[in-house]
Image (cartoon, rainbow, N blue to C red; front, top):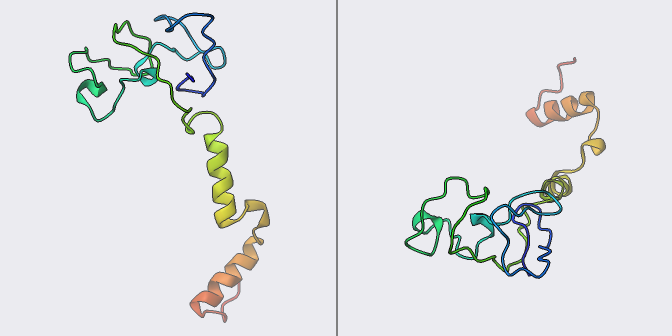
Length: 122
């Protein structure tokens, strides 16, 4: 299935085989006819494209008029919508939520105990 590179929303083709150069995603308004949505896009290849004779495109997320464009059929990238929230939840799981932390004075006492410096008071 074809998805927007930015938000992961499925492309509603309306019977078209490929999006036009100015077609945008219905969910986030990102351009659909762009390098990041193309099946030939490869960051490690020459011009970041598997087709060797393509012109360089500076902004891979911007619309272009490449004749070689074919909409990639791949799973949406998790770096789109919700990735920040997923990362925050993973950090909270790993290190604990900020709401669960002890008051500053308790943390300072714990720090001093770790250093073996219990004699000093605040």
